[in-house]
Image (cartoon, rainbow, N blue to C red; front, side, top):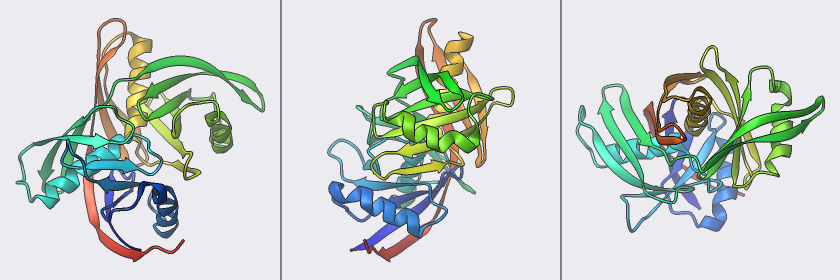
Amino acid sequence: MVLRYTVVDPTKNITLLVTTPVPRALQPQTAAWLLRLEKDAEQVGFLETSDTAPARLQMMGGEFCGNATMGLGAWLCRRDRLPHGVTHDFLLEISGADALVPCAVTPVRYGYLATVKLPLPEKMEQRTFPTAAGEVTLTVVFLPGICHIIAPQGTVCREDAEELLRRWSADLPGEAVGLILLDEERTAIDPLVYVKPTDTAVWERGCGSGSAAVACYLTVRRGTAQCLSIRQQGGTIAVVTAWNGQCVTQLHITGSVALMGEKETDVVF
């Protein structure tokens, strides 16, 4: 099978957007093959048709991804040759989200600026997880399509993170689970995401849903709305929350996107 895909760079969270139709049953193994081919890539999404939106994005594990949503919006702007300096609003169908996801994209000279209105957390709760040194209690933010474990600085060593996340994910729902190492003083994160269907664990250089999860965690802990610039290896993702005194009522992330070019390859499993 000949595959055509676009390399998308939202905050260095390199995403392969496959534009050739691929049957859903073959997507996990296709994604795993592409990730071996493209060493810098961190995730794969598949473009599908939609009856209710300009396009549908099916991520490799059926998870939700804010960065990939931004990338799809940028790709649509380029495909439709939409004018620069103007904000274009899309309602997109994204795996892991129960409703259409609003995405606003502005083509600019150096790429695209994109804002995604994310689905709100389904719940947040503390869970106790086993480690070699004993149990640790951490907050889990359950977003539609993905959940993230928030590990404040000093609670989880980076060297142990992948082994722990693979073990802990068995007790958490969904196809993707993140472990977010949080340096609250610097408002910085180091995000590790494990996707179950492809059995891939990746230290992401930029994580949109992980940034959103941290913002929700800090909103609840501080008891007030947040406007944060969350640092990560690939750059900064801005997150804005609204708070009604009991729960998060709005959640937006903003970042930059570059489209790195289109490629073709023969898939060999």
